[in-house]
Length: 348
Image (cartoon, rainbow, N blue to C red):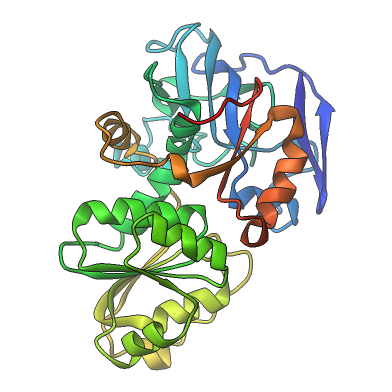
């Protein structure tokens, strides 16, 4: 088969690699019909995650068809369409029993495209398939289904839920990339008083306004007013850079929450000398994807309109082009980039 192989910092190529095989009874083999490029993939390609070894096929989000299952897989069978979660869950270890699947101690967690071969390929081996895949409804488009593999659960679990967004809150989302915009969409379900999106990219600010932010602007007047005045009840830091985190600490109110959702590739300063008396709660975390079934229901009942998050579509074999477009998203206008096994069709 063919897949995108990591060879070292700034080195990837679309190569012929061995076909995956069933290695454990809990495995499934899935033909990849759609996958994506994630911000974490960019960090890997830059060499910022040393645990990813050269020779690894990248990618950790997918939708596709089950083609084979191991002897211990009981809820999946060949021919089923499934969403492959970015996080694999053994379902038996203490963290998994607490639905902390990202912290799985039984061989799961974030392993796809990280410590084992991932989804930016024609086929992928999915460990713990009973607990790490979800049935894709036949009427749910690929472009929307693949957002349930990581993006939407991350926005909800690590951003909105950890940040305790509630009715009447002022919510500031720092960083209007894909996960920040997904947080805007999900936060709206909780009836906040207003949502403010902050970014340095004018196209992304325009996208935030289209997707429901009450205000979308460069760091400036409104942020200064919040910093010097009442502050934000919840700040979702989705930029993943030190300046974004610093802004979050300045704009949050006393007693408020900062939910760090961005992937940080370098250190960020924590100014406790300015924060110690504010009673601020700061949360971090890796997505667990326990919320995927609930989010799937929201899509089925049209409570969430997520298709605008997908801005670019490529054939799978053009994955390197997709990386370039996504890496320059603030300039290209790219939000979520989806790769299709077959030529992508226009969105419905």
